[in-house]
Length: 151
Figure 1 (cartoon, rainbow, N blue to C red):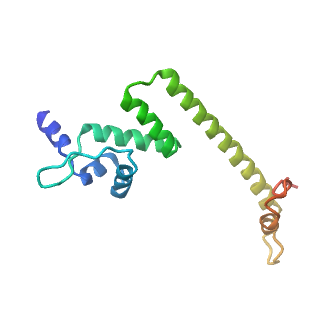
Figure 2 (tube, rainbow, N blue to C red):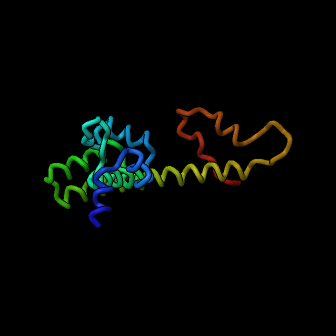
Figure 3 (cartoon, one colour):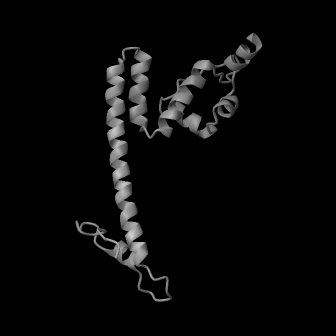
């Protein structure tokens, strides 16, 4: 067990990437924007990552998977880092994010309806007339643009 622990406390960036499934460039990016702390360095200047880095990177990646923005993740990590969070505060942030996700789902469902209805009107013939191109050509500022119903 102690051999495993020693290996985990002396991870190179490539080891961290392999262990977490995160791209090397993504790890560099997260470090540059402050989501990942700078790792300690060896006497020769090589970065060495430990269990806390693995845990934090997994947190960031999971939050990204759940659709949290970088700023939302930064806010959650800030609360965790300060140790000043309550479940109620985290829940408020989570509920807000859930509301945003649900709004996106509604938007995507509306897009699906418009696309399905429009594509259903396509004939698939060799004519240049195409309902989908007509919808795409409609004015963006027109409140009725894209409000197509299936016929």
